[in-house]
Length: 213
Image (cartoon, rainbow, N blue to C red; front, side):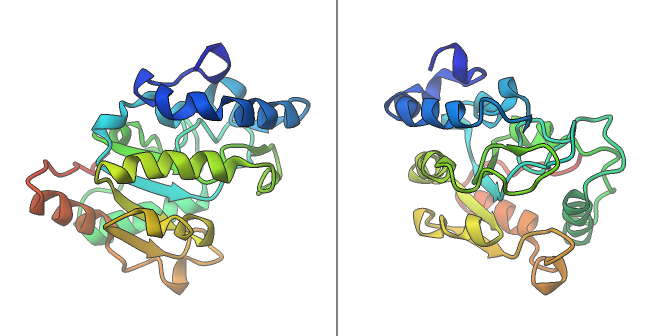
């Protein structure tokens, strides 16, 4: 993929290389914006090997608060406090679903390391403004990424309307509203996504994900 798109695991090159002109156009469009996450973290979700992806959690777009987004959907760096409201709601559902201890910080990298692709439909936004880059072409790129994971059997966890647009790609998926405070009480809480993912993985004879952080 070249230096512009680092960090990207080489397993994604065959998918992303044909999309390079579109990606370059998007990056040019946002080149003068103050963006989240920072440039070298835009494709951080793809640091993992494509062949290792067991599950794809799809969100909307990065956290707009400066310093929160670090390239993995819903995740923040370990020192970020207070946690974003959507992540607090995810952790509330995690504790309710699995009965495990509430995570102390919001770094979801351990999920990534076990095969969870944390993907936003839109990979950037302006600092301080949600959904600022919703109409510049990211969806085609992230749709192709999700499809590549789905083709090899990854389970889809699709949170929010834009994420649910990808449901046709996945043989097995969970769809719900976004975990944001605006919608979480309208069908996110009680969906038990974490146990459902592990049940499906175990049914296939694949090692389940340890969701504890």
